[in-house]
Image (cartoon, rainbow, N blue to C red):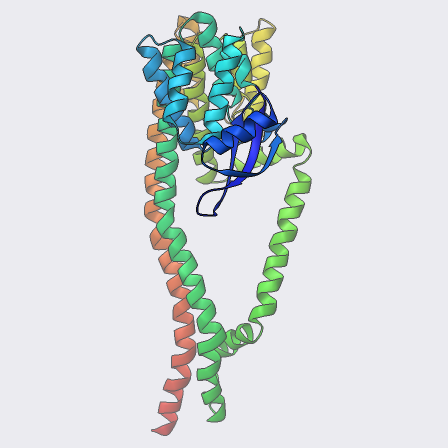
Length: 396
């Protein structure tokens, strides 16, 4: 069924926008009026599937509701219909009704989801496709819901942990700029009128104060140049791979990125393999989830080894960047035929490593920020106090 985007006004005169499924524009206008809205503009959205974006929170809620219904032996058509009626996101409601209609017409759920690449990831679609083929959709949606909820929880923890340091840095920068731009010139101006000899630190900071706007403009320009140069450099995939390889060598940060990427890879591999996805397909899908393209290339090459009938563990062992415990656990699982179980163990191990490193990083970040910002503010205070002390000495 076609989708129509509309702009309308409610009884209070407030503009409302949304999406609705209808057989024709005329029917779409009627449906908008049934919502007690006055349609201003109604037009068919032919490329809606490519442009629709749904919040992660809404995807998690939808997935959990589908998992619960499917576990209760509800048919997929009824599950989609019931879930759509319980949701508030109009775009997601449209997607579910669209999926339901596709299934009624005899299409597979996984292939129907491909119409919405901005909503469902390749991994999500691959798992649903595997679950649909094996008749284990209820298990797949339960695992997907658990995975998405845990990912959302980790993301929220990181955001919460970084909020205070970011606010502290922002507030400190505002204070420093205010002192340099307004307070320091006023106070030092009085010293100059009194004929006091200014120390080097005061002269240096006054120089910064007098040129604060040009300095900020130059810094902004340099940041823009660096950002543009980076974007231009990484357009070529080989350059991006080379850059990402060097990132992994950065002390502390590189190891944190590596563990985070391997944790996401391992948990996704466990989900795909447990849902019945073939090893080569699972590796191919997981090679796409990496932000670090160097690691993505490693897994893609491992997939090629599997397709060619080679032992993919050998190629992983040749990569010095991968931790020994990661290689050992995956190798053990591959030899014993319990690869999904071992990926689950790797995922849990990496999570504990990430949590430990995150705790250490955040415990160090706050005092470092306070020391650096406090030190700079102390310089400004000294730039004011030293001339005062010199004037008092002369007066005595």
